[in-house]
Image (tube, rainbow, N blue to C red; front, side):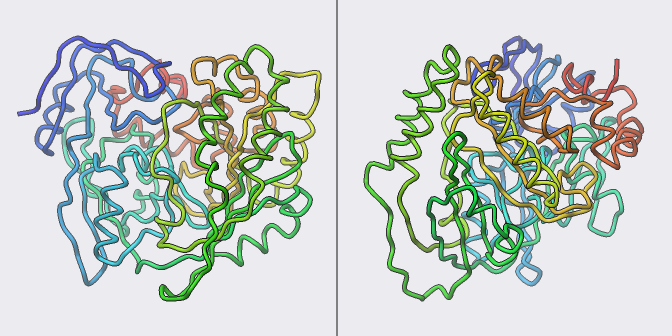
Length: 435
């Protein structure tokens, strides 16, 4: 029987979103999860709470999935692994690496739970969304019944990125590939250099990412190429003080909500000190590219745009945030990544190769007054950009209908599967224009 807590307050990882609840279930089995869903009038569920969007709390009943984290089976012939949805990415990585496998595109932190990562469209770079490597979903619907959705089911593209409103993913099966070694090189480049022939560079490398440094005229380019695992690479890790970047950033950005213009100088100091050296190393996909953790000290927005539109969006973005007569000064870095097109209904890359642009506020407690979030959203929506479901945005139903070709079909399916809006909280009601 599931553990149950009565009356409490759900608090986000940054402590800036809080909601009271009546009942909290801590589940370890599918039967416990099914029972909690069946008996609830309104219910939401969570893992490590690493979303900046208000998609979890604000309902009477919550489910904590962190203990629902087992590896259920392997299929060595087809390289499949089946897991419960509360498993952390780090544990999934360790399990498939032990098999000599990988999922070729992963998010940049490993502390997220898999169910939450899939529901919000989590991605890496130079591949597809994480959800596109799922071969099968097992989902508990609003009425408590279980639905299995495999690759040959047309509805799988609706369930791949669902924001958790079609049902609760119970278990899922990933299709893996053989693991490989990357030779990774990192270096600063002027904007005029890294922007040149960008599409060709992304196609040429097996891993490509840019940490753009607003107000400096530079980006920090990270590129990876597959190599034989025994190939010698003369590793170069840069100065030892690079490990202090987060601490220095936290100090320099501490009061930029009071004096936004100081961000310009903070960025230039950080870029010179921490993004000015060349590094080189090799490792497996995970060893070379996945950050081990992230402290709960920042807030995030992320917008995506079709690859062909990116140059003009970047030009407009840079022009706007470099004006001294506004407050939209942006902390380092803006993370630029690349996602291959797919057919998932609420994917940012639906029917188009996509560039994703992250925006970070290092002051989580003052994120509501961070003008950059508003300015960047206005620019991206103007050019048809799409928001990341797990990060901060203001767009609602009318705007989203214009951005996602399958939006109304998704809404109709959601209403069919959940006619009583069991899986909607206050925030999601506004997103889907439900009362």
